[in-house]
Structures are given as structure tokens and as C-alpha cells.
Length: 135
Image 1 (cartoon, helix red, strand yellow):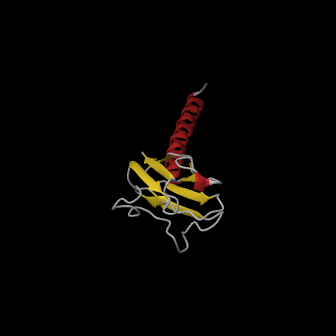
Image 2 (tube, rainbow, N blue to C red):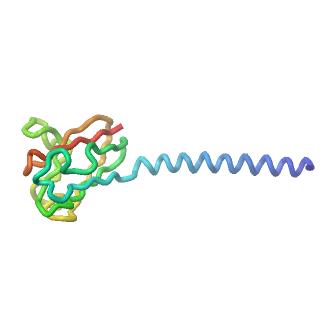
Image 3 (cartoon, one colour):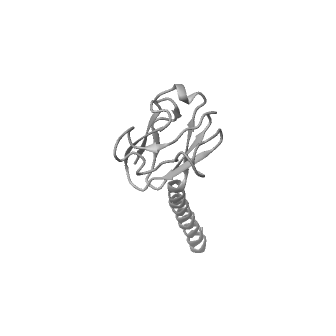
């Protein structure tokens, strides 16, 4: 190989290496913005900690969790433990308005900005409980 061929081969290898590193970093950035899907399962009103799948929900800081009501009954997604003073302070789909999970197919979402374990429940069906683990 000539010096020119060696130079071109080295430059190409370096360029490909930078592209791989760059794409890896882009994927990491986009992964933080991905949405995590959770389903309020059919028949949830008669269930407890299996009313939402998955449970617990695993998310990363910066990710959005989207709960979809796949049940025929009205539900809420309310942060905190039932009856706690801070219930609903972090997030609450509510009993009315555009985020209320009033029927099958409706969704509610919340973006998590800090790590931790967050309990949540349904105000209408207190046995329905779940947890989001944010890392």
C-alpha cells in the first residue's frame, strides 16, 4: 500500500468510528425522550396491583409514561397513596377534563424529571395501585 492509500484507509476508519460514536450518543438522547406505555387492563376494577401492566413501570428521568385505559370502566391515575396528604400532587388524570380516563382508549401521560419510586392509585377503585420506578 502506498502512503496515500494508508492515509485514506486511516481517515475512513476514523470517520466511521466518529459516526458510530455520534449515532450512539444520538440514540441515548432519543431514548430519554421515548414514551413508556402502560395499560389499564380489561377488568381492572376487580383487580389490585395487576390492574395496570406493567407494574411496576420502569422509566428513566426525562421519559414520559403513557397510561391507556383498555378497560370499559372510568379510572384515574393519581400519584401517591390513597388518602395521603400529597395524593395527586405530582400527577392526576382527574375526574373531568381532557385527561380524564373516562372510556376505553383514552390516555393520560406524565413526564418524570426526577429519580425515585412513585406510588399511584385509582381514585374510583382504591384497590387499583401501582408504582413507577424512575432511574
